[in-house]
Length: 121
Image (cartoon, rainbow, N blue to C red):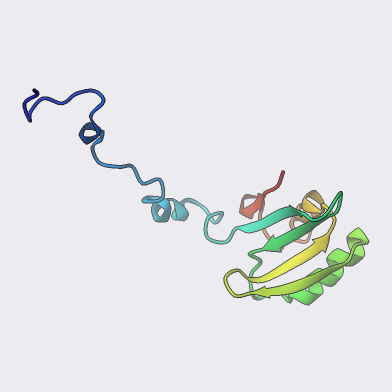
């Protein structure tokens, strides 16, 4: 048969040490504020053409209800502030408001451009 020191190309033992893509995540966080203080703007599909925009990661020093009131008035939509045990306070707005919320947060200087992460379809 084969000797123990011969490695075949299809042998699983030649894969070596596995690669962990998240191993260096802590080291990259210091390269900017985007990893630590990122504001995530997401859209979720509800039923049919209805959608929901969520804003997560705003700093705690801001009054979420005042921000929500300004967003609702600016975009003529309904919204609420939800307390999530894992994510903290999350602002929910009706409709796909990703671009509008991003422009609003930048215009009011609540966040910097490199801190905004827009997710969605």
